[in-house]
Image 1 (cartoon, rainbow, N blue to C red):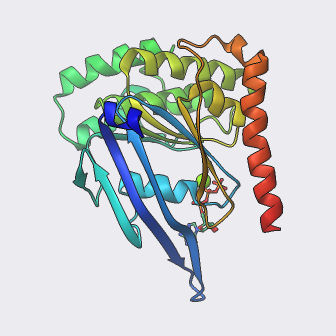
Image 2 (cartoon, rainbow, N blue to C red):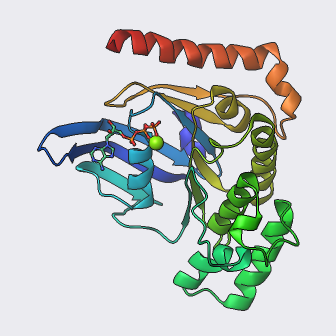
Length: 264
Ligand SMILES: Nc1ncnc2c1ncn2[C@@H]1O[C@H](COP(=O)(O)OP(=O)(O)OP(=O)(O)O)[C@@H](O)[C@H]1O
Ligand SMILES: [Mg+2]
């Protein structure tokens, strides 16, 4: 609790619940009342079984959907809608096929009315940073899936959000590209110091990238562990082969398996 007092809380979620009602009138409790905090500059991952409510939580944080009850505080203020200080990356790149990469990347900046020249300069710099320099005038179909996802990440960063919300951004990539993206994301994070809320199904990806890993139970999802990952930064990908790394992975895996058993 003490180290929480040292850093300002950027985002705080208090007792959040979400019930969905389906067309047949059945209520589904996706979140039963979850609380968590994100401190300024932290990289926090969430792992949990499919359907436990991770995307629901991210959509509430992003202001895309409303919670049934509970509060979201951003820099100490209650929020209910989408925030300018947030960038969102979804599992699939969702680029507009008819727009060039540069125009896709500049779309949010255009929507919120940022100065085009300045936004363009930032976009070009970021494209360079993720290895897409020279691809700005290509169309999405001319890029591989991994390149499109990198373009989506750039798009989420152009307006310089304080928080990056990422929902399984690398889920569709092959193992090596994913590894490469992990290293790249850490590099972006280290150079731009965003607060990142990162959802993944890969335990090792969560451990490699995060300061903290939040483990969720099966639906309705609750946080069952908040695990601090103490590897120093920058992390070489080789740290994933160490015994300490293996211990973290094992711990999280066991929590998920144990919990699955309880629910079956
Ligand atoms: N719009 C909706 N209407 C009704 N039920 C929904 C809706 N969206 C999600 N749900 C239900 O809420 C629960 C949580 O869904 P959510 O998408 O948040 O899970 P998730 O943890 O992101 O899963 P996954 O890992 O598969 O992406 C699921 O049982 C799902 O069926
Ligand atoms: Mg999801």
